[in-house]
Image (cartoon, rainbow, N blue to C red; front, side):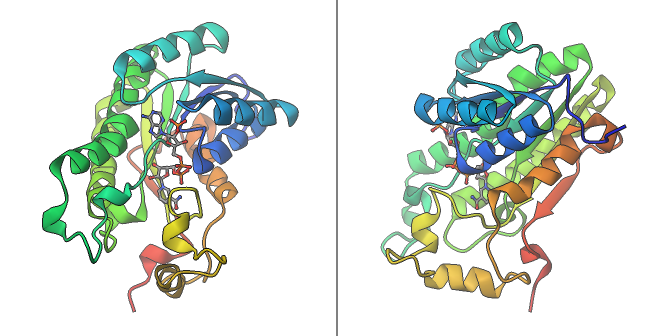
Amino acid sequence: MNLFDLQDEVAVVIGGTGVLGGALAEGLAAAGAKVAVVGRNAERGQARAKAIVAAGGQADFFAADALQRESLRAANERIERELGAPTILVNAAGGNDPKVTVTTERAFAQIALEDWRANFDLNLVGGVLLPCQEFGTTMAARRCGSIINLASAAGHLPLSRVVAYSAAKAAVLNLSRFLAREWAPRGVRVNTITPGFFPGEQNRRLLFNADGSPTPRAAAILTHTPMGRLGEAHELVGAALFLASTRASSFVTGADIVVDGGFLAQTI
Ligand SMILES: NC(=O)c1ccc[n+]([C@@H]2O[C@H](COP(=O)([O-])OP(=O)(O)OC[C@H]3O[C@@H](n4cnc5c(N)ncnc54)[C@H](OP(=O)(O)O)[C@@H]3O)[C@@H](O)[C@H]2O)c1
């Protein structure tokens, strides 16, 4: 028996249009799951689904806004009709917003409340709360499911400058454990993956200069990372397969798997 075989599973990847969610969608499909790539950007979503199908997997793009309950509900119904009832939910929508980053021009006290709220909404409400209410509740009604929420190293200890994002990701870790406890008696497991630093669209400008050389911030991250490098999106797939597979992780809920090259293990 292959512990990581996901044949017969239907995986919903919200933020599957992005860098990490896209890699997770591909990894879940390669393990046999039918994958619903979910997000707002149809062009990127369809391209990702097409790449999965071209590689021999099964996938389709389903447009949804994670901040709109009705939009998630409609996507859930459509996915069930077209792929089958979801059994795996990966929440990979989220990110930092430069408007809530502390800079030399913008002190902590100058962060606008509406910008703070928008970043909390994205990472906590759209990133976990609403998708878990919509997809998680239907999984709990069927007494089967695995939910994987993407946290961040910033949620364990606040990173310099990215204050709202760090606080929201700390809440993601906390809410995920609440849901693990809430839904364990109803057959749904809820875990988190904590990525360290993975180059993507949203952090590219923070990490790299125009000529591709690392910024002082990226150099500081690398110095603080025992493995001395950034992660690559496909390096999250193993953790996701473990958490997604009921055979592999049947007694695992409320757990967090850190994939960060040792970043969180290092002090001095
Ligand atoms: N990259 C890293 O180093 C890193 C480190 C730690 C944690 N993370 C976390 O990992 C997750 C994925 O990050 P990433 O680097 O892959 O970022 P990304 O490429 O920007 O992907 C994020 C995705 O979120 C989706 N999204 C944003 N708002 C949405 C909404 N209202 N409804 C539906 N989808 C929405 C976007 O899809 P649409 O535009 O299609 O809506 C986008 O594809 C995030 O939670 C991030 O905080 C990333």
